Length: 195
Image 1 (cartoon, rainbow, N blue to C red):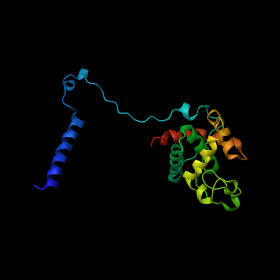
Image 2: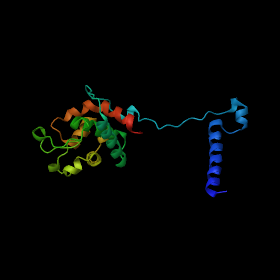
Image 3: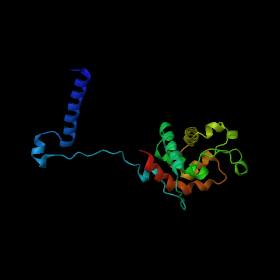
Image 4: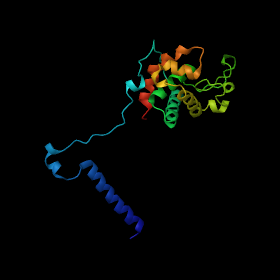
């Protein structure tokens, strides 16, 4: 008999035996006496809790936009970069709220006359202010890592309201505008952190 056919047959029988064990369960005394049987819980990664995502509560009226697939992809990029940087869910909330305010989570190039100086990308970072090259700041991972590097340098950022932490990094002309995106940013982190 051909060894390949023999190996496939043996693996097939082993697979059926395993599948039978998984679906039917092992034949033990526990099945004979259902009162003694213990339920098996499926462990699922928990979504981050509101206390971790919004520890200080939201400030002021909250805004919300409907995201398209590109904006959702950028949310996932920000979360991935946050994890890569070793920072937690709260950092992702601050980053996403900042990007919602700065670009509505759109990776913007130069906007011509509508551009704020040379600001570009998700966080509207400026090459002339040392954030990186145009190619770098329009890369979602790079721009997020640059933002998070700035956030790490803010002493006590975890204990600050979101808008103060974001403003300390961004130095915006509109420092209070970040606060309006905190709820949506927290909802997005809760939805996508473990996806």
